[in-house]
Length: 146
Image (cartoon, rainbow, N blue to C red; front, side, top):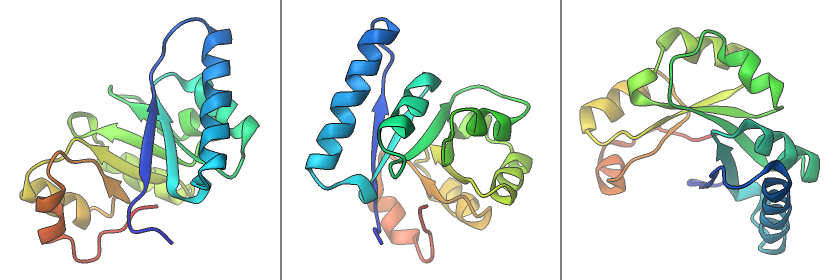
């Protein structure tokens, strides 16, 4: 098991055919580097996540959201993702419970204050993204990811 995972965010660029090729090359690179168990692929462009799962079902994927949504479970399920990455601004505590109840993990970005980190740890989020990992390392007691 990994203490930290590498999150690879796929940015939307070009048409669907170009994006599909990009996903194919990315998955092949991750496999060649033997990083399948230590990587998470995330994107705001949801078709990419379904394509990743088509190429390599073992790769972890996460829906990346920067807006309020009503039904995160349906969104995650629609692309066969494993988790949900949400901005701190749009975090909904009920969604954390709902996603966990359906077997999905939840990570929050971008969390930089020790108070926010502690709060999220107490809310049982599975991971967080920060610009200050040294701050997280000083308060991280039982924080886990995926």
